[in-house]
Length: 310
Image (cartoon, rainbow, N blue to C red; front, side, top):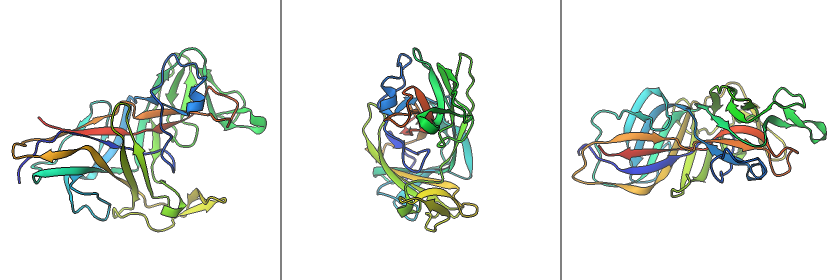
């Protein structure tokens, strides 16, 4: 066993709603007038703040689950969690004296808190954008305050509210200041998996797509198996909690592309996080409301982390 030198790229994707957010066609463009973005649903932005509480990061020779990490080695561990702002280029220290067996590692995993914070600001040109939380009677656009007069502007920012509820983005004039919005990522997937598991193919433009599996865990770091929520409607959609949820962790595992190989010459490792395009702005589109330039919400599209050599 020896200290290792690693060179790889991996992706971890989380969502701001029970289903992972729609795939973004590309980055938000300042010249976009909103005429097609409303149809495309989403455009990517790079956050100025992306804060996670990280408990564990590791690599595996085989696929892993919360109950079986026997093929994995943790390269970072913090039992109380490390709060870190993973802005572009941010990094975390490795656990001391990490050792890995020589060979190929095909998967990476992360254990993080369910609360994430993200701060974004996007300046458009052309058509002013509107901050909308949906529609009122008669298909009229509904403002964040419930009125029929959404605030308009070319500068659209996170406003500090919980995203996933169609009210986390505010638009205004130049000088509009963003506030970090919070995501409680305690609800994933659908009723059939207790709203505690999801899987999706995630990709960053120009990079290879790969599949990420995500679980919500209880305080014992075990996958949720009990129904601690209420549902409604024909599709058993999530409507609320029964008591106080015990869902403090997200566990995500992803196939590494390309796989990582450890050789006799490996010596040292670092973990670097890259969050370019990790945020996204959702637009109302597809005929849901009569406002093609209305912003719907902020979402977290995902991030990538790199194990690199020194």
